[in-house]
Length: 163
Image (cartoon, rainbow, N blue to C red):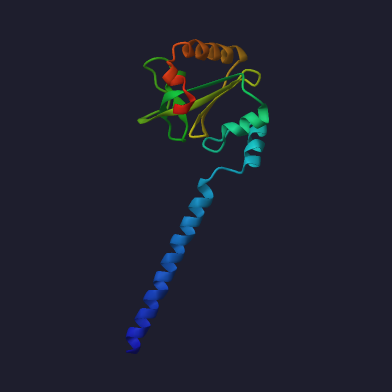
């Protein structure tokens, strides 16, 4: 009887330790997976530390003001090993980014372009997935392209109710 009781105690202790490890892993994964606080995001933007999947469009707008150009569209991306998603439109037709192997993604993207800061930013699901420094002239060229393309959108594509 005593051997059985000791075996049960050891088994219960093992279960408790196992459950404790899973709880610790769960707490750590939740703590590490979230975005930084909004104030921290704004500090990162001010410092020019554009962390992929860590910054929201709001952090840029509240830190830098309204962008020179905004654009929204369904976009195809090259998925890179470091987590960046490079918009297909940033590559020449038929080209792929250096270091790209097989990752592809697609989704509704928000583009913000700041001519005064020379920054082109892309967000998917409210998180920064791509940024590129470019001259003010290049930002304006991109903005003109977006304006031109918007002339050909149907009312259905432009409807805010569908976005």
